[in-house]
Image (cartoon, rainbow, N blue to C red):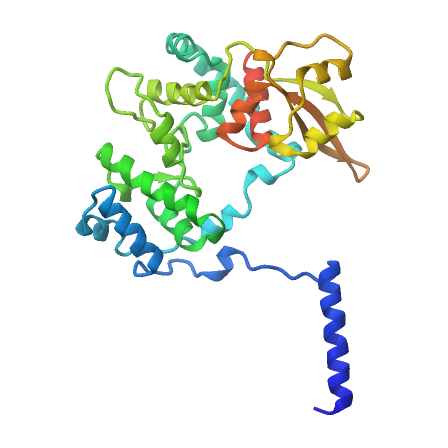
Length: 348
């Protein structure tokens, strides 16, 4: 290469690197799904699998024969990886909300509240969680049990542990917990179906949530979140109860379509961790608002409205501790708001 062309090549390379740093050229990182092929065999001789198997043997007392029977022949499900990077919770609220809060869902939810009234009376008394919220979560998670997911949970969790590096450690734990709950409940792990993220049953619990929060409420000792309506609804209630749901207390209040107070803006920008005192919200609104249990702080949430003339539009709400309890179930504020507004619709 001549000196002239070397200089020209170096100049072009420098310009390209500057453009990348300035964001005018995309340095796109490959997604997890781009790095595998569908039904690619899982290499269970990798160090991370051998370490997993050693833990399952030494701590949880699985035999090598057990593990061979479970994992032999496992393959990557590429669609799982694609869906993990395009989740519904990332959609703007004006798109997200109508998918879940529909006239049909509202009618069915009202019917379920009547059908299971006696059971819900017992659950409210035992766990202190409002029945409309329980039914709303049931509706949004699985359409009252009609859609529990069509992905093989063992394959899903193995795929995510093996080929989703960003959360591989998390799904390693879920894989272990899944095998434990299957053994405890005498379930063949090959035959459980659920979501693309490894959630299952009418509650759509991930394995660790099942082990922590699922309860039996139908008179036996088996925690059945697939078929037992008492277990399903009581398990939802127990989850929210664990995160300090307060019966009949408010979930949110409206703040309007703009925020001007710096304290509210700062809390909203901090996301899930952002909080302000109840007194601040009271003073900003300059009107009576419901008290917060134990005077606990409120969240400030921004929800997307449909753009007008090409300009973004927003709606702001203050989330009470009950709202925060729903975000412990699903970290998305959009999810928590959809649950709340569906529950409200059941009472109208």
